[in-house]
Each structure stands twice: as C-alpha cells, then as structure tokens.
Image (cartoon, rainbow, N blue to C red; front, side, top):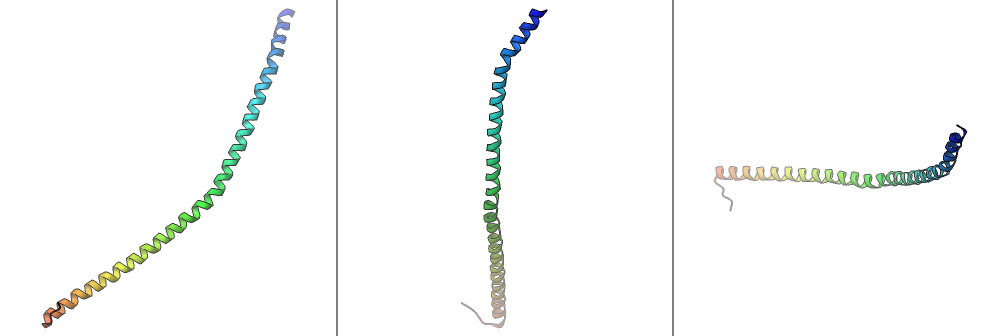
Length: 98
C-alpha cells in the first residue's frame, strides 16, 4: 500500500510541473488575446464616427439633390402645360405658331 502511494505521489510530482507550464502558456495566450480584443474594440470605436459622418452627409446631399430635381420637374411640367394651353388658345383664335 505504501508503495502504491509513493508511486502515485511520484507521478503527481512529475506531472505537476508540465501541467503548470501548460497553464502558464494558456494564460499568456489569453492575455494576448485580450489585448488584441481591446485593440479591435478601440479600432471599431474610432472608425464608427469616421464612417458615419460621411455617410450621413451623403444622405443629406442626396435628399437635397432629389428635392432640386423634383422642383425642376414640376417647373418643366408647368411650362409644358402652359405651352400646350397657349397652342390650343392660338389655334382656337386663328393664330399659328411655327
């Protein structure tokens, strides 16, 4: 019985140091992964405002351009309608446009 206990204790003693080394390596890898994660988080936090502002500005310019095009279309339609009305009026009154 004492021999079995001695063998178990000896095996535990021999296994303890390599297990501790592996644990240390795993801990260092975890610390590096944590630093990389913090770096990525910082990158994301600084990139979001830099990207959001130009996208919002582009959206605003697009809306402005759409409004201007809408105004031009309305003006053109009004002028075209007026032109058609003038031609009808001229035809009814006997005046002819070339």
